[in-house]
Length: 447
Image (cartoon, rainbow, N blue to C red; front, side, top):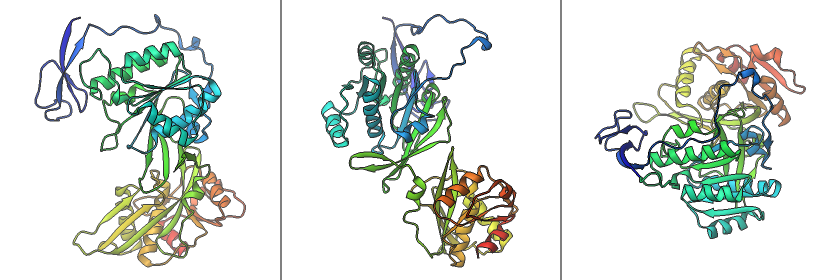
């Protein structure tokens, strides 16, 4: 077979016919590594194709197979689609393999043969972990292998209903001489698995390692090749884990699944709002409850703020779970439009429970928590706060106010501060609705 050398950047995947000290694409130094390819063009896969009018394409809905873990199915968009390629990434030890092993156990009991391929653990290690979690499905097969060609051969012979590859960074193909985990190996192995999934209709799960920056290791094209990208998030100091979809061709990318890590494995959290508010202190300043919307699910989260005099020339602005720049913007609004003196104060803001708040509906809650801590005046424990804050101090309307307020009422809250523009959209019994048009009005209602 004819050999061909090519130099590939291990940071971004840029390829060059000769060695370069600096990558022209990502500007990384000494990142180009020589890789030897065998043979010519890659073999074509699938059947011959031809253009088809869009109106003649079959419009039948895809058939979904439920894994039996409701939180997992919610993030997948309702279940697993035949021929889909799903990538799951997360920090080491976060629970990716545990979640997949539990899901494959239920699928094996329900649908038949499932093949779990591990390139990191031995079969004995997986067996010990499976016994601890109560995984005993007879049709769940374990294969410890890193050669992609052998894995595909076993898949064709066994004909499983679902295939799991843990992890893509440990796999290699003999068509390349580079080491497993290199950009070329990850890209080519993922490409072969994609052809296997699309050609045979076999759903494939891929586990991906993440870098220190939190991104999935390997070429960026890996996330473009797959149908669904899921991130498993969590803090080592908290037992709670959040499964979040950042790409999904078969469902919404706004859904999240909440799990609790226990000794026997991951346990679903059916009502995360109660969980996040379980340890909320009462009668203390700096605590506010906001209602965020993750896909179709409303979540009530506690925001905690601490404002204290700064001992340095430049005061600190530290956030956990919320955008640092958003806090700086809201503090400027409090100073300019409300008149609070915060220039010489250290401000710390935390979303309790390890939750990450990305939508602007938590703005008014952040403002209320900071003001409460600065004034040392607690907010009524039965009040939930909603609203987006603009640069002129106005409180703007939010989406889905009815769902948020209904969830708050269900958990026992009796008062809601919300934008005046959303008042007509909300009709919830037993809830006092207070509409506000500015940050100053909101603080007047709270204090």
